[in-house]
Image (cartoon, rainbow, N blue to C red; front, top):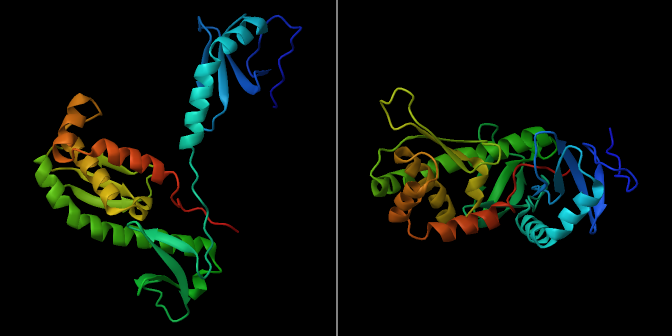
Length: 261
């Protein structure tokens, strides 16, 4: 069902209305338990107006106008941080990244099915038969990132674990649905648990992969992201805030697996 546009002649707003004001199209969400108006700017930079039941459109417009500066600031922030993840094509010369460096895709009809993607002499080489099969081609690339990423990260756990004063957890690299990393404690308390890293992470420079590794290792000692967590991370990685900001900026530009037809 398409939302209706709020009628200026009608006294009250209804759930699902669209309120056009100040150059914005606001989605109206009415909740009978709500006592006050509120505004949220969503991740796609759209704006939702939360309305108590029985309130008028005139009141809503006044509220939005009073908070115009706040909305403009939040929309600008959402636009700056919106994901810009590009899609790729499985064609000769397409650019892929690994640990901060760029590699162009090359097709090789002789490449073995056992290793359908390899890094060879500065080129990311793929079996030519995969270029015409997007599903298999994408799976082969993701598998390559998982395999080489785990090999690389395995060598980075020990020094960061030593700085944190923790044992090395088990490690896997997989699709985490957009998250960079996750830590899962051992349910029985007999081991250091398991760290998972998202495969797109390994497109980033080494320093940012290290940041995510250190971040997840800190969770072995401190769950959540309270003051104690950031203090512990800061002891091991004093520049963690700069790396987090850089990760936020570069991360929204990474290839997340999407393919152009």
